[in-house]
Amino acid sequence: MMHNNERTSQSAVASETRETMKRKFTWSTLLMPAVLAAVLILPHPLFFNNAYLDIEPLYVDSALRIATDGFGADLSAYYEIDANPILTSLIFAAAYKLFGESPVVSRLTIFLLSFAFVFFLFYYIKPKMGSLISFLAALLLAVNPMFITYSQYVASDLDFMMFSSIAFFLLIFPRPSSAQLASSIWFGISLATKYAVVVLAPVVFLISVLRSQILTQFSREKLVSLVRFNAWYFLLAIIVALPVILVVFHFQNSLLPLREVPISLSAVWFLPRFFAYLLWLGLFIGPSSLILAVSLWRRIGKTRFFGLFIGLVALISVVSVFYPLHSLVIEKEPLGAVSLGGMESAIPPFYLSAVLFFVMVAAGLFIAHGIIEIRDLWSSKDDTVKHFLFWGLIPIPLMAVNRAVARYMLFVLVPVCLYMAHVIGRMYSERSTRALTIAVLIIHAVVFLAIGFWSNYYLQQRGLGA
Image (cartoon, rainbow, N blue to C red; front, top):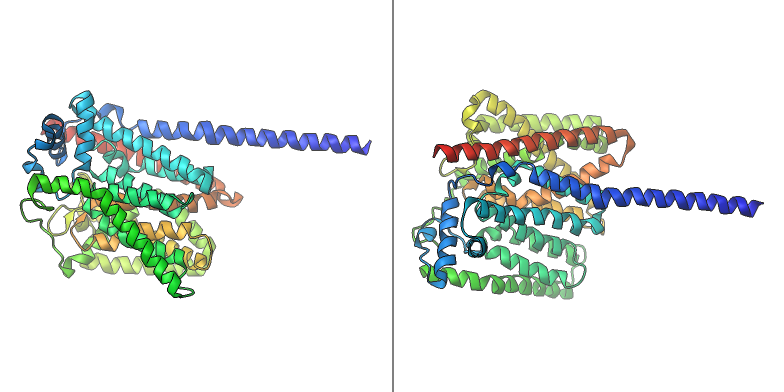
């Protein structure tokens, strides 16, 4: 009789396990991709026929000339302004060769690339960090207003973000062993898209240093291995990029534009550029900063959290005295192009500064949370989260050396989303904060989708008025 009861009990447990696995299977294989696809498509269909604006005609014209004239194309107008290789123009040229040139073809080309990349992120991260983290990271990326805007904007920033991110995925998760080789190749492809990949090179070096464990136990063998890895990694990347770079040399007999490229390395401008980038970091965090705050509260305690928060407010108050926050989102040289898409001129400076003050606090919370995370994980064998933080934070001061450009923050958007997914996923796993986490995430997605939709609409209206 006992055996029968045991068999019945085991059968019930097995049945319950199958039901649980079935629910998990449905959620991770059907609902998650469906949500991502809907979120990706939602802000775009009304705007694929938007007129070309700003630097878009530069890429369209160069791509059209390449599609028409091939290697004999006249790209002098392109090189008078752009200081990058022409891989992006080659991608659009292939699309024009197949489907002809039109705003719809141009915008669909970059949109389909961005669509594919979000799903690549989801499925590549999923077996390594779980369904929830991969879904959250992909969702945070898909609803980001800058990603929404540039996922149909004809320029090289989004494809550079995708190519360099793939390189880092392969570097951070080096399984199978050929992943590091593939990472170097994708790093070279990103170099063929933008010379700005130089700001990401120190992150590759730092990851290799941490992985070698040379800081904890120095040895000659580890040093030789570290030097060998970096030598072949960057050499292979240069070899991969070299054909496209040589095409640049063929068209203009130099690697830089025909006119002198304006580069301002003045130390006086470093701080305002750095703070302008921090503003955009805070804008990326948005409503999710509440989850960061709660997570920090729980990790360091109420007293330390209030001390940290008051310190952040005081520091940002001092900064705003020297650099009024509304002045950091105005297109001007030598600060750079860091506008908010027209909103900075529509909102009175006082109210704009008040909003940006809280945005800067969000950036401060992210950095503080990241520093505490690195401290707590420093001796851990799993470096994944640390690598996300280094990838997301180290390029910011390096980018601030030259003129600040808001769209360059796309370079660090993916690691910011990955780290935020890690934090949100951890908060969701605790029953006491699950409801709050879901509520904040829904608000974050709805607000950011609305801003992304408005940004596309704003660009459409600018095109109609041009």
